[in-house]
Length: 156
Image (cartoon, rainbow, N blue to C red; front, side, top):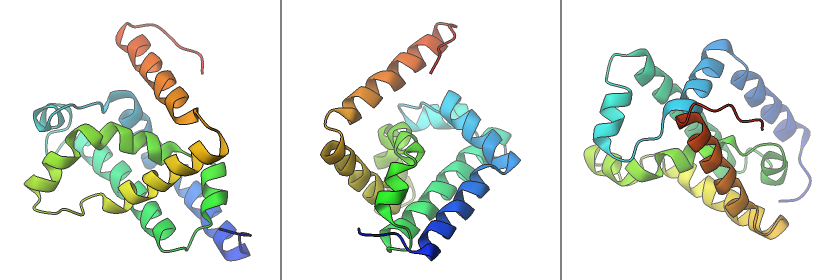
Protein backbone atom coordinates (compact mmCIF):
# COMPACT_ATOMS: atom_id res chain seq x y z
CA UNK A 1 0.00 0.00 0.00
CA UNK A 2 3.03 2.26 0.08
CA UNK A 3 4.05 4.88 2.56
CA UNK A 4 1.50 5.97 5.11
CA UNK A 5 0.43 9.59 5.02
CA UNK A 6 0.35 11.73 8.13
CA UNK A 7 -3.45 11.75 7.90
CA UNK A 8 -3.61 7.95 7.77
CA UNK A 9 -1.27 7.60 10.74
CA UNK A 10 -3.18 10.25 12.68
CA UNK A 11 -6.49 8.49 12.00
CA UNK A 12 -5.01 5.18 13.15
CA UNK A 13 -3.84 6.79 16.41
CA UNK A 14 -7.32 8.25 16.94
CA UNK A 15 -8.87 4.82 16.37
CA UNK A 16 -6.43 3.37 18.89
CA UNK A 17 -7.43 6.04 21.39
CA UNK A 18 -11.08 5.07 20.90
CA UNK A 19 -10.16 1.47 21.76
CA UNK A 20 -8.87 2.75 25.09
CA UNK A 21 -12.20 4.39 25.97
CA UNK A 22 -13.35 2.65 29.19
CA UNK A 23 -16.71 1.34 27.92
CA UNK A 24 -15.23 0.01 24.68
CA UNK A 25 -12.32 -1.52 26.59
CA UNK A 26 -14.80 -3.28 28.90
CA UNK A 27 -16.85 -4.44 25.90
CA UNK A 28 -13.76 -5.76 24.11
CA UNK A 29 -12.62 -7.61 27.21
CA UNK A 30 -16.05 -9.23 27.62
CA UNK A 31 -16.25 -10.09 23.93
CA UNK A 32 -12.86 -11.78 23.76
CA UNK A 33 -13.49 -13.77 26.90
CA UNK A 34 -17.13 -14.73 26.53
CA UNK A 35 -18.41 -14.41 22.97
CA UNK A 36 -17.82 -17.81 21.36
CA UNK A 37 -21.22 -18.80 19.92
CA UNK A 38 -21.67 -21.66 17.51
CA UNK A 39 -25.35 -20.97 16.77
CA UNK A 40 -27.79 -18.07 16.80
CA UNK A 41 -29.38 -19.65 19.88
CA UNK A 42 -26.00 -19.36 21.59
CA UNK A 43 -25.94 -15.65 20.72
CA UNK A 44 -29.37 -15.17 22.28
CA UNK A 45 -28.26 -16.97 25.45
CA UNK A 46 -24.99 -15.04 25.67
CA UNK A 47 -26.40 -11.61 24.96
CA UNK A 48 -30.16 -11.30 24.85
CA UNK A 49 -31.59 -7.98 23.64
CA UNK A 50 -31.59 -5.27 26.27
CA UNK A 51 -28.68 -6.68 28.26
CA UNK A 52 -25.27 -5.23 28.96
CA UNK A 53 -23.76 -8.16 27.06
CA UNK A 54 -25.86 -7.34 23.98
CA UNK A 55 -24.62 -3.75 24.14
CA UNK A 56 -21.03 -5.01 24.47
CA UNK A 57 -21.43 -7.28 21.44
CA UNK A 58 -22.90 -4.49 19.32
CA UNK A 59 -20.25 -2.01 20.45
CA UNK A 60 -17.37 -4.31 19.51
CA UNK A 61 -18.85 -5.36 16.18
CA UNK A 62 -19.82 -1.86 15.07
CA UNK A 63 -16.40 -0.48 16.10
CA UNK A 64 -14.50 -3.05 14.03
CA UNK A 65 -16.97 -2.80 11.13
CA UNK A 66 -16.33 0.96 11.11
CA UNK A 67 -12.54 0.51 11.16
CA UNK A 68 -12.78 -2.08 8.38
CA UNK A 69 -14.97 0.24 6.32
CA UNK A 70 -12.32 2.96 6.58
CA UNK A 71 -9.61 0.48 5.67
CA UNK A 72 -11.57 -0.85 2.70
CA UNK A 73 -11.87 2.70 1.35
CA UNK A 74 -8.15 3.42 1.63
CA UNK A 75 -8.49 5.88 4.49
CA UNK A 76 -6.03 3.79 6.52
CA UNK A 77 -2.72 2.45 5.35
CA UNK A 78 -3.20 -1.32 5.53
CA UNK A 79 0.46 -2.19 6.00
CA UNK A 80 0.60 0.16 8.99
CA UNK A 81 -2.70 -1.13 10.33
CA UNK A 82 -1.82 -4.80 9.82
CA UNK A 83 1.63 -4.36 11.38
CA UNK A 84 0.14 -2.87 14.53
CA UNK A 85 -2.99 -4.83 15.18
CA UNK A 86 -5.02 -7.88 14.45
CA UNK A 87 -7.73 -7.81 17.09
CA UNK A 88 -10.32 -7.34 14.35
CA UNK A 89 -9.27 -10.67 12.86
CA UNK A 90 -9.85 -12.43 16.20
CA UNK A 91 -13.26 -10.73 16.48
CA UNK A 92 -14.17 -11.94 12.99
CA UNK A 93 -13.10 -15.50 13.87
CA UNK A 94 -15.50 -15.37 16.80
CA UNK A 95 -18.48 -14.35 14.65
CA UNK A 96 -17.80 -16.65 11.69
CA UNK A 97 -19.91 -19.53 13.05
CA UNK A 98 -23.03 -17.34 13.22
CA UNK A 99 -22.43 -14.92 10.37
CA UNK A 100 -24.48 -16.77 7.75
CA UNK A 101 -27.38 -17.02 10.20
CA UNK A 102 -27.19 -13.32 11.02
CA UNK A 103 -27.11 -12.42 7.33
CA UNK A 104 -30.20 -14.52 6.73
CA UNK A 105 -31.99 -13.20 9.82
CA UNK A 106 -31.28 -9.57 8.88
CA UNK A 107 -31.85 -10.18 5.13
CA UNK A 108 -28.45 -8.56 4.58
CA UNK A 109 -25.84 -10.40 2.56
CA UNK A 110 -23.41 -7.62 3.45
CA UNK A 111 -23.85 -7.74 7.25
CA UNK A 112 -20.31 -7.35 8.65
CA UNK A 113 -19.12 -7.44 5.03
CA UNK A 114 -16.54 -4.71 5.58
CA UNK A 115 -15.01 -6.68 8.43
CA UNK A 116 -15.01 -9.88 6.38
CA UNK A 117 -13.31 -8.24 3.37
CA UNK A 118 -10.76 -6.50 5.59
CA UNK A 119 -9.94 -9.68 7.53
CA UNK A 120 -9.55 -11.65 4.30
CA UNK A 121 -6.86 -9.18 3.23
CA UNK A 122 -5.28 -9.21 6.70
CA UNK A 123 -5.05 -12.99 6.63
CA UNK A 124 -3.47 -12.93 3.15
CA UNK A 125 -1.04 -10.22 4.28
CA UNK A 126 -0.03 -12.31 7.29
CA UNK A 127 0.58 -15.39 5.15
CA UNK A 128 2.68 -13.35 2.75
CA UNK A 129 4.76 -11.66 5.44
CA UNK A 130 4.84 -14.51 7.98
CA UNK A 131 3.81 -17.84 6.45
CA UNK A 132 2.06 -20.09 8.94
CA UNK A 133 1.22 -17.30 11.36
CA UNK A 134 -2.55 -17.58 10.88
CA UNK A 135 -2.51 -21.24 11.86
CA UNK A 136 -0.25 -20.47 14.82
CA UNK A 137 -2.54 -17.67 16.01
CA UNK A 138 -5.61 -19.92 15.67
CA UNK A 139 -3.83 -22.55 17.76
CA UNK A 140 -2.95 -20.05 20.51
CA UNK A 141 -6.52 -18.71 20.58
CA UNK A 142 -7.88 -22.28 20.87
CA UNK A 143 -5.43 -23.07 23.69
CA UNK A 144 -6.39 -19.91 25.55
CA UNK A 145 -10.10 -20.71 25.19
CA UNK A 146 -9.55 -24.29 26.40
CA UNK A 147 -7.54 -23.08 29.37
CA UNK A 148 -10.21 -20.53 30.29
CA UNK A 149 -12.93 -23.17 30.05
CA UNK A 150 -10.84 -25.41 32.26
CA UNK A 151 -10.40 -22.61 34.79
CA UNK A 152 -6.66 -22.35 34.19
CA UNK A 153 -4.74 -19.11 33.87
CA UNK A 154 -2.70 -18.72 30.70
CA UNK A 155 0.21 -16.39 30.23
CA UNK A 156 0.23 -14.72 26.85
